[in-house]
Length: 536
Ligand code: DGJ
Image 1 (spheres, rainbow, N blue to C red):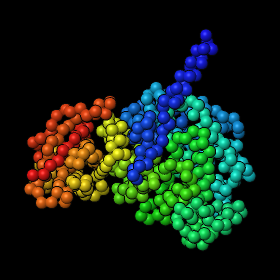
Image 2: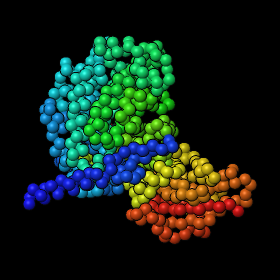
Image 3: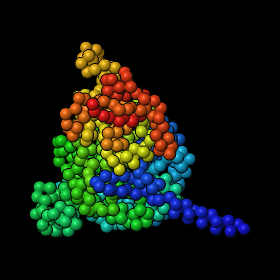
Image 4: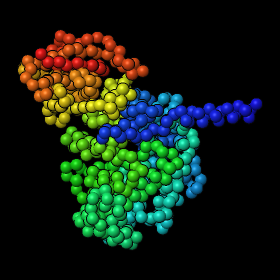
């Protein structure tokens, strides 16, 4: 009897495994979606601090995640933690994490901290990071050794790959529920302090012909690195080498369990980049995205980690990484309140997710990169925005994949923003009261805001119908040129409502009169509008 029950159990598990589709990235007509449980999913993420991936720290993680209303938590899985002794694996933390995440109905993104964690091997096991002969470091032009492992050492690739494969094999076996929706392969790879490795092995490779896959991707004729890339040769060579290493680790893991895989980037300044080595040379910076695409086809996404508070820089980075061949995924961003507004810009660019870093209550602050606060006040600005989207995140993800969406965040100069919605134009503005036209407001003091937190998102529902939500923002509409000469623009109907759990619209009331005479004004109250436009 016991044996029979055990068989039934196995069959049920198999049926469950078959029933729940593996998360995957889908690209159609240049638009991207992360499919989870068979439908587009928007990652409303939170990443824990680096040293919070231990059972003892988890009680300080969950309350912050809950306050944030995140649906996904990004958590490191360190090589040193799963393979402290070569060939002997310990997945006890991973199992604990899976169980606790499931109890809270959260999804996970796991971060493979291995050969590269911000340039160095700090998270590699001691048997790796203390054995310089077997796992050599990058050598500079002057012969100095850096704290960055060489991407050219077969032993390092072999050991990292074996561990990653064991990790994904275990995950495939224990995660039939698909709690884990993506894996980050390494963390901010690349090298500080040298554009590339100058070890004898690297030198030999540098003088060979550029790999055919890269030449084909860039449409360049054959030659060695210097002949093909001139002044960029050393950087592109290192980028290829690091990416090719990561690509092989990723491909082997994917063969075991085909989860979406991505690499995150320590960025270079998008306007004044400086020199490779001053920024992480060999990482997926904006100038080598094509190199990564050619070298690491098993990697689905190249994702920026954005710690630039300035709106011009932030938006430029988003534009550089949102490409028809690369889904936008903000794998990390600062947890200071100045960053919270960019959520609207990210989501409005059809991103698959947004993940502020350092979201837990372990008391660590990475100020000045992120917030000084480590308590609930650090989480709240992000929670406020997630509160707007979380109730209909699945609907949003579908609209973003199938149709058109837009977003805007209050910029540093508070300039108005015009969004071209096709048949209609939206005029988005900040620092307004709910009542009153632009002209009168000049004589009235603007509402006091503690910091710039304005933003909104718009999704198209039909030719003349839009879904809008936002925070501390005004939106007004005008007929686009396609309408020709018209008397003016009017609202056919503005409904406030919500989506129910099945994704059906639930009408609550109509906005009219004062609520629409001066544009549609969002405050700190979560409100969702369906707007139908017309001309007269
Ligand atoms: C970016 C890294 O990817 C994170 O792991 C972390 O070290 C932050 N920088 C700084 O807090």
